[in-house]
Every structure is written in C-alpha cells, then in structure tokens.
Amino acid sequence: MKGRKSILKRLKITKNGKIMRRQSFRRHLKAGKTSKRLRNLKRIKELKGYYAKKIRKATGGRKTK
Image (cartoon, rainbow, N blue to C red):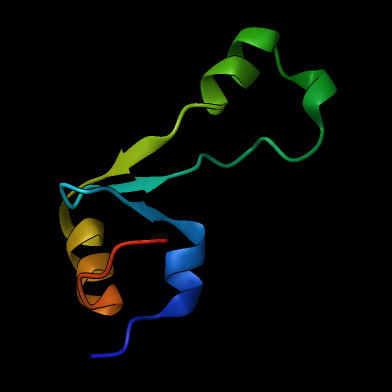
C-alpha cells in the first residue's frame, strides 16, 4: 500500500514504531515567549492514541528515511 509522503515528511517513525512529532508555536513571535518555554518547545513529542493509529494506517506502516 502506498504511504502518504506528506505525512512521512512531517513526522518521524522510529525503529520500534513510535511516531514522533515536532511542537508548534516556535516559528515566530519569539520575543513574547520565555527562553524556558522556547527550550521546552524544541523537544520532540511522541504521538499517542487515536491519532497515532490513524497515522500508522495512512503511512502503511513505513519508516521515514
């Protein structure tokens, strides 16, 4: 089954099948955010539950390159 390339570009699928995503609110208007908040927004989060299941189905269980 063909995977959705747009999803694979935005997310990282690990060796164990976890789906990792970047956090929003880090592109612009940084002056109004504290350095602690910006530092915490750098972290990559794991996608869990219902959405992770949907992404796995849409990508056909593929790993990112």
